[in-house]
Amino acid sequence: MNAHFSPLVDITLRVNGETVSARVEARRHLIDFLRLDLGLTGAHAGCEHGVCGACTVQVNGQIVRGCLTLAAQLDGADVWTIEGLSDSGAIRDLQEAFVARNALQCGFCTPGMLAACDDLLRHNPEPTREEIREHISGNYCRCTGYEAIVDAVSTVAEARRAAR
Image 1: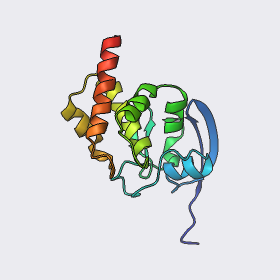
Image 2 (image 1 turned 135 degrees about the vertical axis):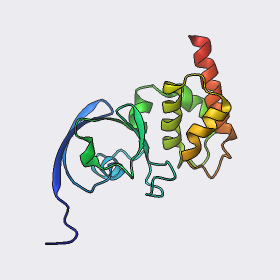
Image 3 (image 1 turned 90 degrees about the horizontal axis):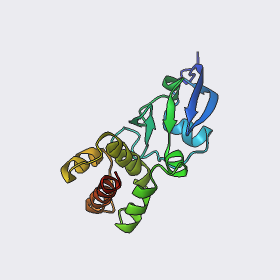
């Protein structure tokens, strides 16, 4: 038997609100499935060890590392990528705050960072600056120094609180 053979698994899941059915190798990572099979290239494959956060996406309402999650595990799951979050308008205010606060520069970490920040604000609509720092601590950014990101998330939390 070929040592590189991986059995195929049939999966059906929802990606950004649309039903997707596919046959995937059992060892295919979610990030590769999204990027290579579905053409959703917003989330990035960075360290491929679950450390940098560039591959962060939402699965069943929770953020996961796409490089550590197998696509075969997600039969029946609801997956949201940065494309879906952006196109739906769900993170428009976060995106605008990132631009206004200069919380993005090269952009490599930005999709995962936005997914993590959206997750934080959905579960904790009024985070302290320390809670924001803690929540994004699993997402590496080499350009911004993080303070502008914390400012952007704080700005959105305050604006959403005022709107309630």
